[in-house]
Amino acid sequence: MSFISAENVKFSYDEENKNVLNDVSLTIEKGEFVALLGHNGCGKSTMAKLLNGMLTPDEGVVVVDSIDTKNEEMTYEIRSKVGLVLQNPDNQLVASIIEEDVAFGPENLGIEPSEIRRRVDESLKAVGMYEYRRHAPHKLSGGQKQRVAIAGILAMEPSCVVFDEPTAMLDPNGREEVMRAINALKEKGITIVLITHYMNEAVLADRVVVMDGGKVLLQGTPREVFSEVPTLKRHCLDVPQATELAYRLIGAGVRFTDMPLNVEECVSFLEEVLG
Picture 1 (cartoon, rainbow, N blue to C red):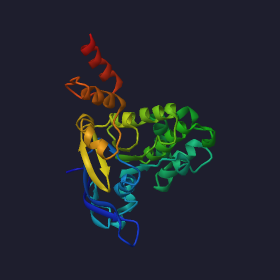
Picture 2 (picture 1 turned 90 degrees about the vertical axis):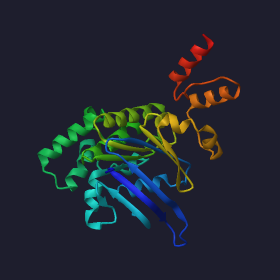
Picture 3 (picture 1 turned 30 degrees about the vertical axis):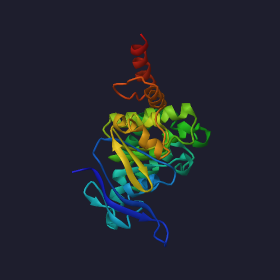
Picture 4 (picture 1 turned 90 degrees about the horizontal axis):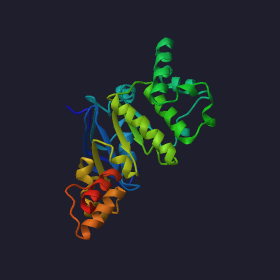
């Protein structure tokens, strides 16, 4: 049985019933890293909030580890299993000292102090921020703040973390810091759902799900999805730069056995062709 499943989900924010999501079905396995892509307004962020019970579907069902998210008595249980990291870390930082901020979630779960101490230390170490534990969050860079926000979610020991465009407000160094932290979580067996506009982040996932118009347009491995360049372009969606170059070379008559997903793969292939 899938860790998270959404079946025939419809959702609307207004009384006119203009659906943001239209009959979306999606499964996420335990330990899987899924990247969720699409335009602004395609329903990605709404899907993120449905996956941790912040929202519930108007029609259809979302089940987290065998729990229906519509079961209000199990809301805290669901959110302890699925953490949500938002785009702006300042929206998730609540204390004046980093370690106090990371302790906030476990304290509200009623965890005993010695266990909170262990969780705070381990979570900060997991994202490379332990040495900053007594610093003030407002003095950190954007990437560091986002890593502290991730630590705050980790301290609640979820089985899954949903990231809603966590690198959108960061510079390249900050994005790299956060992606290293996300990959470290993946290596620990934590289920990852990453909503992103950056294709070089999406290619790191086990599976890519592309949304458009409130529906799932494509899904598969990164290589399978990004090989569908004409379909993605028809829907005004991006592909990785290496894939874009390969697509143009294919149009000029160059044959690729596999569509490259990154610079290294593209360079390796071109060396063979030109060598």
